[in-house]
Length: 338
Ligand SMILES: *Cc1c(COP(=O)(O)O)cnc(C)c1O
Picture 1 (spheres, rainbow, N blue to C red):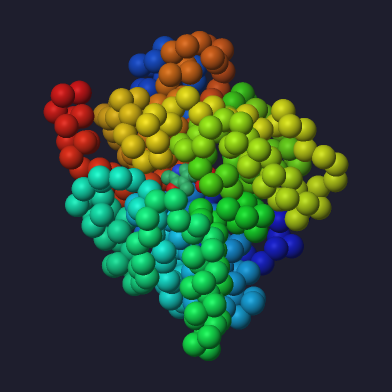
Picture 2: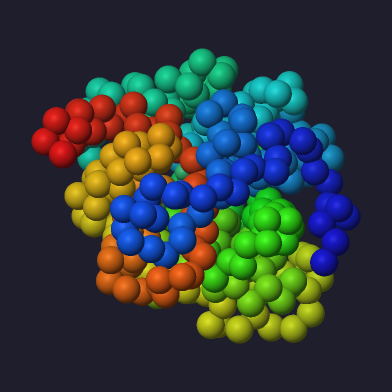
C-alpha cells in the first residue's frame, strides 16, 4: 500500500488530534474512551469530507475540470465542505439538494450548512423531493453544462467512491501512527456511517496494514444488512485501487443500525443526550445527523457492557457541528428539559 502514488491536494489541518475523553469515560464508568478529532480538519468548520476531497479534487484538476457538481441532503456537511474546498482551488460548485427530511422548519431550510453553502459561493441549482435519483439528476446537470461548453466533474453523494475513500485509508494510517507514538493500544474504533466512504476507507486501510483493530459503523440511515453490503463493495473496490492482494473477509465489515430512530436526519432521544453530554462534559460539539447518533450508539453499547472495562475505544468524530444550527428548536428544548 503506497498512498503517495495517488494525486492529492492539501486542503485541511492534518494530523487531527487523538485525545482522551476523560470526563465522559469517568461518567460512564469505563472503558477508556478516546476521540479522533476529524471535526477539526479546518476547512470551513471541518469534517470527514475534507479528507476525501483531497483526493477527489486532485483527480478533478488532473482531468481539467472547471466546475464541480455534487449532491446531498439539505443540511449536507459534504456539500458545504465540497464548496469550500473547490473555492480554495478556484473552482465553482453547482449543487443539487435532496429534501430528505420532511417538515423540517426554517432553521433547517436556511441556517446551518445552507447558510454556509451560500456564503462560500456555492450555487444551489435545485431542491429536489425526497427519493429523487440524485445520481441521475447530477448526470443531467453535467450534460447541460457540457452542452454550454463547460467541463464538469461529478462528485458522488458523500464523496463516496474509491478515490474519495482513499481519504480514510489515510486516516487509518494516521491513527495507527498516532497509536504507536502515544503507545495507545486501540481495541475498538467506532464512528457514524452514511454514504459508506468513511468506513470503507478505514476498513481498507486497517486490513491492508494487518492492524487487527475491529471497526464498528453506527448507521444513520440504512438497515444493517444493506449498509454492510454497501460498505463491503466500496471497501473491496478501494483495496483494488490500492492494489491490496486477496479478498476482503466479510467479517471485517460490522454495522449496527439500532440508532437510526425514525429515519435519516430525524432526532432521537439518544442523539439529544449524546450531543448535550459531549458539550457539557467535554466542550465538544457533535452534530444531530451523524456524530450525535454515532455517539448515542457508543454510549448505549458501553452501558450494555459491549466493551471490556479496560478497553481503549476510539470514536472518530466526523464533524458536522454547523448542522446544529439547522436543529435549533429541538436542541433548545432538549437543553431546557434535559
Ligand atoms: C458524511 C458524514 C458522515 C458519514 O460518512 P460517510 O463516509 O458518508 O459514511 C459522518 N459524519 C458526518 C458529520 C458526515 O458529514
